[in-house]
Length: 193
View 1: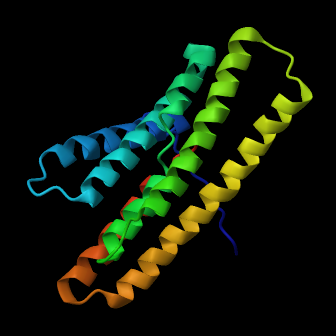
View 2: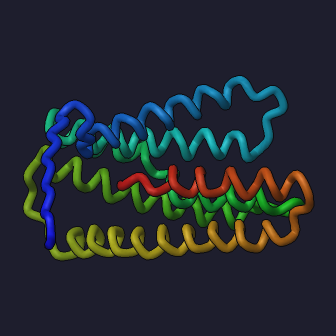
């Protein structure tokens, strides 16, 4: 004999919408940026962490304000240009002791940031002027978008590799500390652009 029990619990007060998740992420990122102000001995990793958190906060703000700001959301999106590339630099600073960040790494990260700024600037101008893009401008916009996706995914994989490679070389307490902080940082870097 089978007994079927069904219960329906409707608790709308705890239902999390995507906006609530964005607000939670925004508050977490802002808190982490402010927390970096209180670090006494600041290193490159602290500055990079603050930049990544600030950029994720701007990307989240862009998502939250897209309906109310219309095209001006893309100006906020320009500030969200240090997410994946900044996270890669942060991973290098955390897991490499010597020559962690060289000029070529900074140039590569700036190139990715420039692609993001180009794309957001194009979308802002298009939203304000409603222009009919010519073939070359439209092609450049699509190329910038696709290249940004490719390079952002690549530097996230490089950041993951830095963590895997660096966790093997860390010893004792440093290894324990790195293993717990890295997944939190990785989660925070996944804010949508």
